[in-house]
Length: 254
Image 1 (tube, one colour):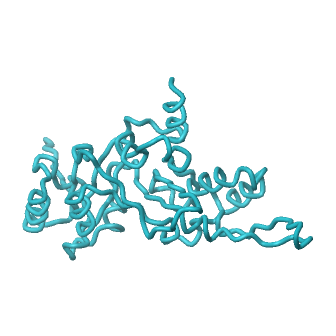
Image 2 (spheres, one colour; image 1 turned 135 degrees about the horizontal axis):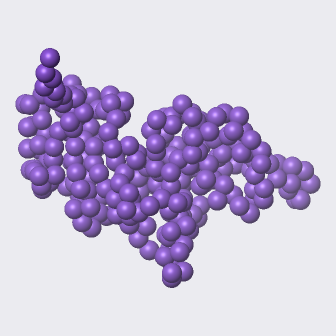
Image 3 (cartoon, rainbow, N blue to C red; image 1 turned 90 degrees about the vertical axis):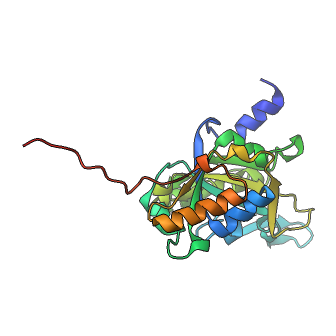
């Protein structure tokens, strides 16, 4: 295996590139994604759970010889240049539809997209220069005590800081384990300007294999959303409503 291929494999953190991941994207965000063929990656500082960024939110200290004392080290510049995006390996989930899709507001109705991990990673992992800063991996779920123990067990924090920061973003508390999450993590050099978000070209939209609609939609809303997606170039055969709530009674003889 070539060096570059081996390094790429390492940055996939044990994921199988042929496996699928899914993302529930609100229609108001999905339409510009398809029209512009751009994948937007936001800062991890915008994630809702206050426990996110627990490593970068910690207090770091080092001995400063100039001052001849221990001083606190700010991680703000690093945190402001760390970006991420969450996907899930769960193909179907009642909870996900209810959390991410508002069936009563068409702009905020979510569409679930399906893509192979390799194809997703290819979008953000575009050159050798990006290798050291871009990774994808499954989230590991831990209790609060396990997270504390993980942090207290870290060695060589200074020299291994980027690796520790990356791995910490692949750790989440056990109450979220039902999400079975996969995350893209991108860390930009602190010498580069901090951007509000990152945007990556999607060379071929065919890598998105399915556009699944909310199973709670009525026929009118289902057709309206289907037409909106068709109008921006999505193949109608890729669009279908989730069968989560479909029920076929069984014929039983008594």
